[in-house]
Image (cartoon, rainbow over all chains, first blue to last red; front, side, top):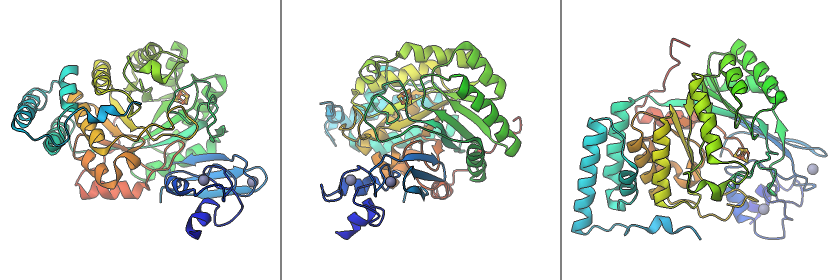
Length: 76
Length: 352
Ligand code: SF4
Ligand SMILES: [Zn+2]
Ligand SMILES: [Zn+2]
C-alpha cells in the first residue's frame, strides 16, 4: 500500500518512518499510520534524527537540524 | 496485567436483581446529588463504577442533569500550550516528556512571541482560559522569568484568563504566580493515593497535595485531576474521585491514558469507552459543582460519538486544539459540536 509509505515518510521524503524512526521496509507501520492522525512527526524521514517539535493549539512545527522544518495543524 | 478492572461487572447483566439494584442506586443518587447537591461517597462511586452497561444511558442522563442543575449549560473552553517541553527529571510512567525514558520527545522552549500568538489565537476561538504548561519538577529562575515576561506580554495583547501548570511550587513561587495574575493553577494528583507509587517514584502524592494547599491559600483557583486507565482498579478509581472531592477543586481535568511510545505504560490497553463514560458520570456525581473538563485522550478512548456522550453525561469543559505532545481536533470542530448540543460557550466574566 503506497498510502502508508507516503504518509509515514512524508510523501517519500526519505527512507525512515517519521513516527517510529524505523526504516520503511522494516515493518508495516500500520499503527504508525493510525497514530499520525493524532501526533506530529518525531523523526526526520531523511536522516532519522529526532526532531525538535513545538506544538501550539492551532498547529505544530518539527525541526531537523539538517533538513529544516515541517509544519502542520490539528488532528486530521 | 492490569486490564481486569473493566470486566468486574457482568456486561449487560440485565437479570432482575441487578437491574433492580441499579435502579435503587440511581434513585438514591438522584435524591442525594441532584436534589441535595451532596456528592457521592467513595463507596457510592464504586457502586456507580460497577453499574452494568445497560444502566449507562440512565447514569449519563442523571450526571447531565446534575451538571445542568449545579453548573448550568455553559461549557468552559480552554487552550493549552507547552512553554517548556520534554527533558523532565521526574518519572511519571505515562509521560512522554520524562527525560528518564527513551521517548522520541525532545526538549524545546517556546519563545515569548509564539506564546503570545498562541494566546491570541486561543482567545479568538472564544476560549476564556489559556494554560501555560512546563515539563518540570518545579520552576527554576529561568522559568519564573519566562513566566513573568510571557504573562505580561499576553496581558498586553489579549483579554483571557491565564492559568499555569509548572509542577511543585515553593511558597515564594506560589506568591509570585499569584502576583503575576495567574488565576488558576493546575497540579494533578494523577491517580489515587494508593496507586500513585506504581505510577511515580521520584516524588510523592503528598508533595503534590502540599502544593495544592498552598495554591488554594494564596487565592488562586485549584485545578486538579488526573489520568484514568493507567491500570488502577475500580476501587482505586473511586478512591481517586473521593480524594479529589476532598480538595474540592474549582476544575477537574480528566485525561484518559493514551499509551506513549517509550514510556513504562506504553503497552497498557486503552480504556474501553463504556468504562470512560461510567467514570465521567461517577466523577460528576462525586463532584456536582466542579468544572469537569475533557483533557487528553478522549479522541482515542471515546471517539466522536463518545465525546458527545460525555458532554451529555457530566462534562462541562473542553480543551480545544492541540495538546502538549499530541494533536487534538481543530477548535472549530468542538465549537460546532457545542453549538449542535445547544451548549453556550462560557464568556469571560466582567470582573476580570
Ligand atoms: S512531572 Fe510532569 S512533565 Fe515531568 S514526567 Fe511527570 S507528568 Fe511528565
Ligand atoms: Zn513507523
Ligand atoms: Zn533530517
